[in-house]
Structure formats: C-alpha cells, structure tokens
Image (cartoon, rainbow, N blue to C red; front, side):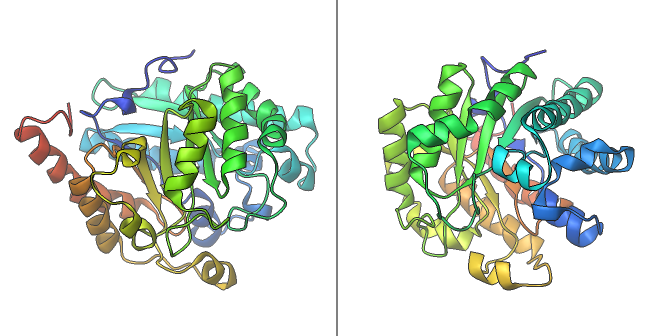
Length: 329
C-alpha cells in the first residue's frame, strides 16, 4: 500500500532521515558475495540472497529506531534496468518481477518495524544506463525517458513512495528520468555524482546541472542529492546563501576521498575513517540544516552511518533548541 507518496516526510525540515550505506561494496568486499556487474537485485532469486539483503537492511532499521530518526529504504535495484538486466540474462518480464520483489521486501520490513518515531519511506532505486563514473554514450532527454520508463512504472505499480535516481552523471539522463516519473505522478529524487572538482563527470558544474533539470522539468524533482563522492570533492562548491542549494536535501558520500578513476583501479576496499566522515557531515549540516537525508555510498557500512548519527544529531538538537524547525520532531 502506498503510504507517503503524496506527503514525503523527509521534506519536512523538522525530521532527520538516514539511509543505508554502500550495499554493493559491503556484500562483495566484506560478505564475499559474488555480484556480477555490482547487481544486488538478483540476490532476491534465492533464499540465501534474500536473507542477506534482509539482514543488511535490518541493520539500518535497528539503527534508525535506536537513534529515533526516520529511514529511507532504498531498493537494491541500481542495476535493474534494461541494459544491465540483459547482460545478466533477464528478459523484460523477469526484470520487472525482480523490481517488484525488491519493493515487496521493503514493504515487509516497513510493516514489521516502522514506528511513529522512526518512519520508513520506500524508494525505488534507479541507476544510470551506463557507467556511473563516466558520461559515455549519453542519451537525449527523450531517449532517457523512454529507457527508464518501464522501471519507474514497475515501482509505481509496486507501491513505492518515490523513485531515486542514483549516481547520475549528466543532466539529460536526469531530465528524462524526471519526465518519466512525472507521467505517472511519481515523486522523484535526482542524485548526481561529482568528480574531485565538484563537477559532474560530464564536466558540467553541479549548480548548472540542477538549474538545467529544474528549468526543463518545471522544478520536477522533489529534491536533489549528491552520492558516490567524498565530501571534500564537493564541499567547496556548496556556497552558503546561494538559492540553488535549497534544492539539495540529501548526501550519500563515499568513505574514500579517492577519485572515481582511483577507485576503479583499486583491488581493495578503502573504508576511510568513519569518524572523519561523520565530522564532514556535521559541518555540512551546520551550514545547510535543510539537508535532512544522510547515508553512505561506496566503502561505507554501519560504522559510518553510526558515526554520522553521532555527529549530526547534536547539531539537529542544537538547531531545535534555537527555535528553528530542524532536527528531530
């Protein structure tokens, strides 16, 4: 059943939400699970894989309850789009079935564990058509809309609250995704990735990409996020007082400060320093208290999300005590 589609609670400045961490890197590097093409969705086919995903998400469910924050449950479907699905042997019908199963898993988790203090929002995760780090074989906005339409329709039919496009590296794909979601009146979040200079892999400044998407879609995204980059890569482009920054409400950073190229060449996982990452998040929250969705990406795990909670909750309470409508409600 659709619960928050028409009233996303993370849009309220008085509540803090966490998300999970680096799902794929945890399952591959820590748990030793074979995941061709970084595709987590096909784990749903077998009981052992399903249980691995259940256990993974339960870690963050427990953490959200313990800290009294909301939780955005992001489906393990970053690779569950047509091109990647075909590479893994899925037909259109079986791929749709896997996307349905992914959302059903999250519904089961929410039904069991959601509380009034820890509300849980179900998001259908969309990944880029190509490489998340390289803006190759770029589509037009129209082509991107046609390409992503089926997965978004499946998430809509499966009663997800919203869809979130992660690791998007050029504006036209983002525009197509937004247009596809708009045709189904589905809330959509665009999460861009950036290089060490704060620009998209396409070379476009983040500010310009957000302006282009908003102008073309009539402010279509519910909000924007930044993911798969370390805070040191984008902190300098987030200048206080600039209106466009109000559109960014979420951060899912990498554990490592390495560039995308360096991460691609690395044979081991760089987990960085969880406490240091938490410090970076605290600074961002102090500057931009409207950023209320906090999670992790490549290399992060529950240690990083816990460090983020410990670093950012005092900031939230401080704002609340000052009479501002941010922090925990």
